[in-house]
Structure formats: structure tokens, C-alpha cells
Picture 1 (tube, rainbow, N blue to C red):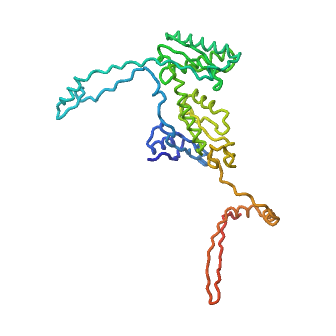
Picture 2 (cartoon, rainbow, N blue to C red):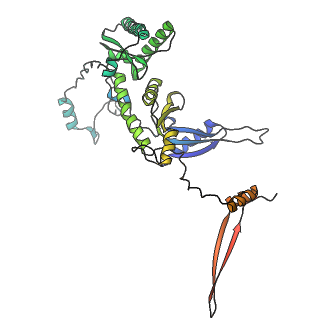
Picture 3 (tube, one colour):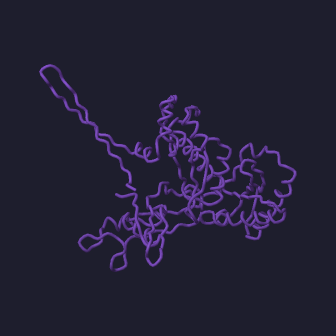
Amino acid sequence: MLTKVKVQGKTISEAISKGLRELNMRRDQVEIKVLEQPKKGFLGIGSKPAVVEVFKKRWASDNLDSEIYMDVPRRRRGGRRNGRGRTGNRRGGRRSHDSVMAKEERTPRVRTPKANEPQLLPCEAIQNAVIPEKLQAPLQEAQDYIQNVLTHMGVKVENLHAWWDEKQQRILVTFDCDKPAIVIGKEGKTLEAIQYLCTLAVTRKFNTTISVVADTQNYWRKMEDKIDNELAKAIDMIKRGTSVFRFRPMSSQLRRYIHRAVQGNEYVQTASEGEGKWRKVTLRPTPKALEEAQRGVAPADFVPGVIGEDVSDPVAPEQPATPETAEAQTDETPTQKMATQTIAATVTETVVETPTHVVEEHSVVVTTDTENK
């Protein structure tokens, strides 16, 4: 099955559609890389088509919310219906007696909602952090703002605390509530909206940009723990010679978390690529890591000579220049230099035997690819 194609089209959209048809995939299953932009030209002269590369996604399609408690009722799937609008198995046009008995004996399963999970306290480094004097008021403002918003939503809040995360440079507000599904929302959209409004309120009041993150039911904590495990694997892959590691598309908050987590690393750097909901973080080796790996002085846990896609082949040590070689190099014209680089030599060997001795004749055929001007 094809996983990567290179197609052309009058426009980028047309080229992408062709690529999707060739791969037999949907748009959300592939990544797009634009190689050449289309050009109209003048009266059709000099026009160029768009060239794109369509390839299958490289990240896992697992859902982070699958392991996080959300007490939203799920849709119950019904069985197949026959022509008369009834369900059940039929044999020879009649309903099976065993299936009828099994349905009568089956007891209905009652789904009890899962108990609310208490919000865990942050790590000791955050709990014991010394809060600067200038951040005392913003922390109290963020705590009061979230308290007021949740109260107007009709949510009972307990254990509301505001912390300062020095590493991530953000205010972390943790709390317990009686209606976590309403506060979190589908895929955390409601919780994102609450903390976004709180960030705007704190930023406008104190005229400084301060990020606020609100967490309940350990929603963001679980996501960040999972990202930490994936980030450790990604850094290990980069150390072992992987050119680039791409995370799955994620929200701006989680992308910012990865950037902050890798900030200060001398051998790994991050960057964002893609647009909209497909935007994701990529991990690459730094120029310092590439240089040290090429010189063979990289740390022991880095694989020298194979880190990154930009590492060139090892260059042979230069021979000391003699007056003869220096003179020969200065006398070469640009055409001769180009011919020397593109030279192709074919050597044929012919052996001529005589009664007294053997003579070896060598003929060399040299061809150069140069333009006759």
C-alpha cells in the first residue's frame, strides 16, 4: 500500500485531491508538504504547476481523552433491525429460541457514574517555590476570577489554590468541583475557555502577559505526564541519530508546554509546523550537536556522525600543499576545474605477448561534459 506520493496540479488543492485519490485516504489521515508553488506565467508562457508531497501521518492517532474521566453519557448502540423493525437472529425465517431465552434471562446493566477524582497537588518544586513579590497580586486575582466564574456557572468549588510554575512561567490554579464534566467539557474546550478568559483578565489588569492554567480532575496533569513520556522517547531517538521527531497535532497550550520543557537543552531544539488544528511540534538536533557529532566530541549518549539529516560525509584530511601542486591549482581555468569535477575515465588493458617478453598497453578514454561556447 502506498504511503507517500508526489503529485502535480494547476492549484495546490487540485494536487492534494489527486494525492488523496492515489493513496485512498482522507485529508485527516495525511500530511501535506508543498514543494513548488504554482505560477500562471504570461499568456500561459512560463506557467508551472503546483507540486505537493502527500504522505501518511507519522504520529499515533490515540486520543488523550480516552484515559481521562469524563462522565458524559455515551450513545448506546442498537442492534441491527430486520424488515419488520425488530432485532434478533432468525433461522429459516423464524426467530431462534435460544436467542429469545437469552434475552429474557439477561439482566439490564446499570452504569454507575465514576466517583470524582480528587485533584492532586503539583510537584514539590512548585509547592515550595518562592513567589516573587510582583506575582502575589496576579496569583490572587487569578484565584478570585476562577472562583467567580465557577460560582456563576453553578459549580461548587473546593480546595482552590493558586501556584507559580517557575519552569513553565505560568500561574497554575487547581481545584475540586462537584460537576467536572461541565467544567472540563468535550476535549477540555470549556476548561480552555475559562483559563483563557482568566489570562486576559490578569494580563489587562496588571499590564503584563501572564499565562494561567486551570486544572481539575487532573485533566491537564494526565496530558502533561503523557507528553513527558513521549518527550523522553523523542529526545532518546534524536540522541540515537533520528533526524527529526514530529509530535501529533495539539493545542497551543500543550505545544507551549513542550517548548518550555526543552528550553535550555544544548543538543535538542523545538519548532512548530503546520497550520490550524494540524499544527504540531517538531524536535531536531541543534547545530552544536551536529557539529560535535561530526567532530567526534559529542556526549557519550549521542551517536557521533549520524545525528541529523544535515550531517555531511567525513572529509579526508587535507594534504600539505607543495609548490608544484599550488602552481598547478593556480593555473587551472574555471572550465578546467569544472571538467576535473565531472571527469569520467575508462581504462582498458591490452596484453601483447611476444616470444621474448610481455608488453601491457593501457588506453585511457576521457570524456568531459562541457558546453561548447
